[in-house]
Length: 621
Image 1 (cartoon, rainbow, N blue to C red):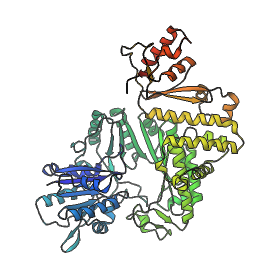
Image 2 (image 1 turned 60 degrees about the vertical axis):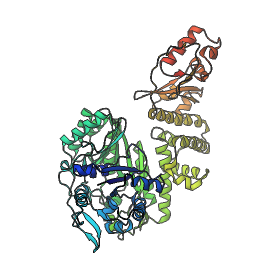
Image 3 (image 1 turned 30 degrees about the vertical axis):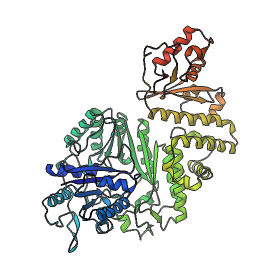
Image 4 (image 1 turned 135 degrees about the vertical axis):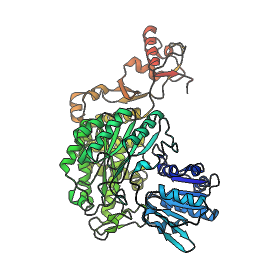
């Protein structure tokens, strides 16, 4: 029997790992595993291409998981599969199928829907299909039959996760060198916030054993994985469990970058120190800075304690992000603005801002009338209005959230944002509101502003430079423009270099360094600045007013390159700069210097530049 297990990913990325589908395959008996194939789909592909992928190998069964982002597209494809291949068995599972099983069954013209955790139900269903048995409403299954829709009882979640085969250790998923991994180490959530799915249908939190985690982690290390997203909604609860996990990561996988989700209440100094020992980023859920708003969704917050715990991370140099939600019951646009100010004062490296989604199957959805919530009745179920927040206020919040995402996240503003606020005399929210107005006045207007995911860092840098210059002129401080632009450019090129390829030391490759043509390595960046870049770096946290008082804009050109995990930024002396700018792949150092310095001096510079990997042979691509 041939089974195609399909996953529609959000986008191509290191996170596009078909973990759910692989977990289903790993749970099948060996004889059925041999006929099961994982199919990766992406929303940018045309329907005909996706249908061709789904029918690869002439399958007997096509199964897929439905999420908020994939439900409508996959069920549309399912209807077309039914038309083209009436005998094909079509099965769906996932959160959308769990909370809306009969509607999903009808909408996709499916044969069966798996509710809840799917490994056991899917294995039993596939065994019955392989034996050509009449399908029965087993626990966890809703199916179509000649007698109508049949619904089996709910299936209890698996109590011991170690009893489920590992998709990694079984070889169903093979970690790739330099690639990313989704690592599920727990299921469930102890906090049961009203807007969230995580705690639905589970009894507490179930964790993988330490032995299973060690075995999977060792596999990732042997494979040379570069990034791991830890699937545990609160890795640091209980606090001691979080510390044990971090010690394990530091001991067994010190070279892998880990992405973790934490609750601020359980971040203590020791946890922060342990996080500081490993390459990682930590996402912390804030949602709102107003305790009275959070009480409406069964969350608690002590703003002072939250800020204190986040500062533990900052003190240890840990990269961290914060989550915010606008449109929460009891909140309004003014409240969201206050929450955004609070969050930005904590200087997160990244700020994820979401509109409230009123997800079917959650307590918030059940209680929506209590809060006057009106939301979309189709995915992604976004709030349209509430008793406290009418549509025009939601639109204002969306606009502000978009401006923050573009300027702060895509623009990588964490390090220089406070300096720009001090320089312009603005608070964060008015600054971002003015940036939104600036973007809305550009080609594409308001529509382009709201498409925050469509912006790239080089485009944002250009907008930032123009906007900041306009703002400094408007507040009567044009003398700060050069320093502000230098600050923007430095952090942009630092980030681009850090994320780019490494510049490796080289040899002369048998070429004459003086009489051979060279070109600058593509990993090297030469960036002009108004101020001497070394003065800017020596200031630490730059104050634009101090910068203009202390230094004159004498100009400099800086060289950026990455060596290992370190970004090197050096101010170039005149002769070195002349060589690098002149190496266009046609001229030699002898021709570039043309007698302006001695051959001994010029050749020494050329040998050094080639040896450090700054110059490469002209014909090298």
